[in-house]
Image (cartoon, rainbow, N blue to C red; front, side, top):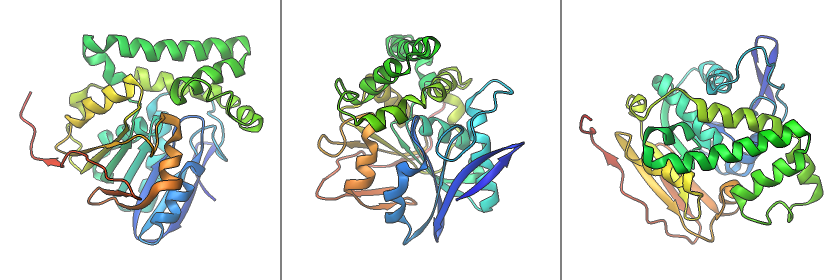
Length: 293
């Protein structure tokens, strides 16, 4: 595993395969191994780069010398992309999708295509008063997780986090070892929540993303995630929306099932996604300039 240095800290990443580079950004509470099986699929045709975010996997924890923002998470990833020396296909899941949007918005010249899997760009829910209830749903969860950490009850906070995204009973069904591992990530989860909610960007700020964009969303996604997907599906010049049907992956934190069990092909440059024995009835790409306003 390689690493990129940010001052005195290191961010770990893997670099395998050959071909056009694909950079994958994982969700909260996981690590680069989220993409392991997808990398095995891609490596015959693509160069696969997966990073452990701050405090995840083999990366150093966030040093705490400044306020943590999406820019803090994006900086080492941009470093790696610049070290690659050529534009990349950028893939992000959940929190990783929010980070990927940040990178593409501020560095469009570095991104060949953008694939977003239920991106948790919660700040976009602040743009329309009709979305206030959905934003409140997320801030209530973030506050509950923060309170749990403040009291030292990490298990309660992790249970609330997991059950919100994966359904009631998901936490109780987990092996004890996995519960222990996830509960240790809760402090970083709080930073992720705050970075997503407090990002200082409006929908119009993403207008400079002109590369092909693929947005994936499960049929059973939570309300805030579905609404963010709807917002983004109308925001880009060249966009494809793919709804993933029940039975393929049904919950936000189970996206790994899409990667490990069902993906038998992904052509990132043209954004064609094929799932084994499953037909995806997504929208056709809309690749024309958006009207002003």
